[in-house]
Image (cartoon, rainbow, N blue to C red; front, side):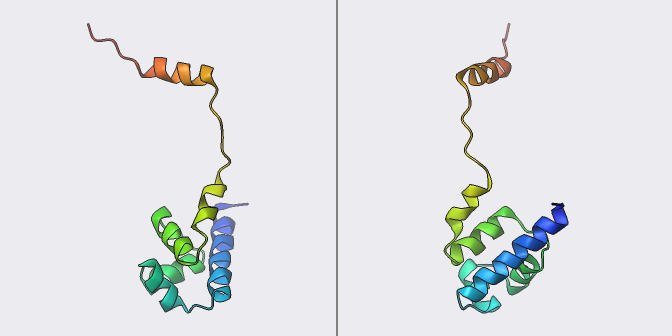
Length: 92
C-alpha cells in the first residue's frame, strides 16, 4: 500500500468513526481541540501530525488503537548490551 493509499484509508476510517459516533465535523473538531479544517484534511487523506491523530482518536474513544500500529518488540539482552557499548565515549 502506498503512502497516499494509506492516508486515504486512514481518512476514510476517521470519517466512518465520526459518523458512527453521530458527530458533525465541527463537533468532533471541538472535542479534539483542533480546527474543523484540520479534521476535514484528515478525513480527506491529507497528512496530519501524530498529535492531531491522537486527539481525534481520543475524542472518538479510540486512542488505545494507536499503539496497535506497531507490534510490541522485545529487545534481546545482547542487542541492549551492544547499544550501550556503542553509546560509550571515553574521555582521556
